[in-house]
Length: 276
Image (cartoon, rainbow, N blue to C red):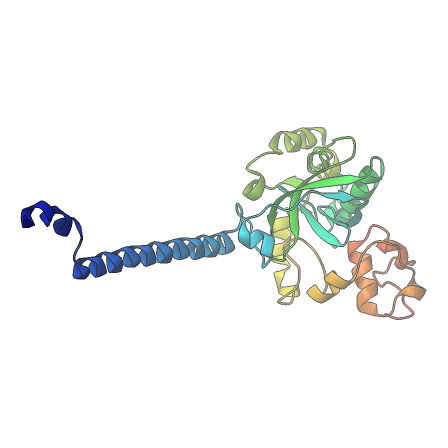
């Protein structure tokens, strides 16, 4: 038999040892690729969780951690203060503006103090009641896991823009990047809202009153009381003193709801005096 005739068949078959090495290399490369994919996925998750959006500090919300964008919130709003509302139980902070705090006073044209924080909330309440429902589009989560958004009335009017334009709130460059600077300039020239007299910018007012705020309070945006209180109380529907069970609850309504002052009939700053 001519051995050379069949020699090419033997040479075309890889040796058993070589096959084993090739298999090890294949599975080794496959394992490295899997490890790389898992590492990248974990890195992306951690980055999205701790980064947040813009200058806001992300809260522990799963949607924000994964980078998904919540759907717009639509409904009838209850007023918390001049830059915060509540729809369907969700607190919503207007993006890019800052209104006087609920307990903040300003000086009018004659120099006499007046509750500008309360006036801001009342003006917002009237403005929103004229065209419902309200729609708020997501911008970010804040450190208290509140929805920060751009909100419009049913007729498309920007709520933040109107509040600044009427002098009931300030453009907050830290977050707005000057989006409402022109509206603020118009209000200042017209001397309307808080521009009629003198005032302290809300962010500065909070800084000077920080000593009166206990740790854990929702003080960054003017919410009063313990965080647990802020989460359990709501301005909708309106409450009467006979329906209120504690002084803490009554004070929260007084400082955060547009109808809160009606709980203080004699105007001495003490609501529902039967329980406070």
